[in-house]
Length: 206
Image (cartoon, rainbow, N blue to C red):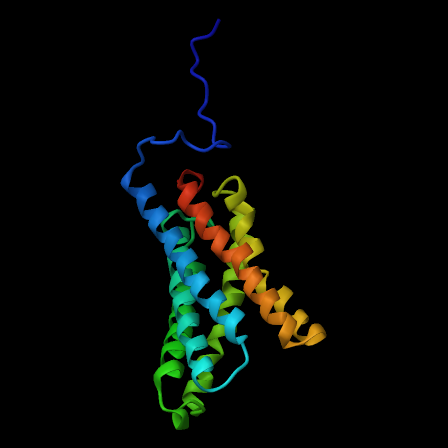
C-alpha cells in the first residue's frame, strides 16, 4: 500500500473529449497552420516542381511563402515552450532570417519580371536556404535539450532533412523524380509535424 499518487503518463494521448487549456489550443492552431502552409507548397511542387518560369514560378513563390508562414507557426511554438533550452537567441535570429526570406518570396512572386533579378532581391534570396539551415540547427538543439517529448522530440529532425534528401535526388535522378521526392518529404516531415502538434500539444508543454 502507498499513498503516493501515480505519475501522469505522457506517452499516451489524452482521452477523447478531455478539456485542454488555452496554451494547448494555441499550439493546436499553430500546428494546423504549419500543416496548411506545407500542403500548399507541396501541392505546388507536385504540380510545377521547384524549378520553373512564368506563372508556375510565381505560384511556387507564393505557396513557398505560405510554407514559410507555417514555419513561423512552428517557430512560435518553439519560442513559447523554450524548446531549445533557456536561451531564445537562436530562435530570435532564425525569426529575422526567416522574415527576410518570406519577404523575398512575396516580392519575387508579385514584382514585375524585370525586377525579379535585381541585386538587392538576390541578396535577400540567400536567406531562404539560411533559414532552413537555421531550422536544422534548432531541430538538433531541440532533440538534445529534451524539453519536447515523444515523437515531437525527434520529428523536427525528420522535417529538416528536406534539403539533405531532395537536393541529392535532384542531382542524381533529375527534376522529374525530385519533385515527387521533395513534395513527398514535405508531407512526411513538416505536414506530419504540424499534425503531431495539433494532436499531442501536451508533448511540448513546459
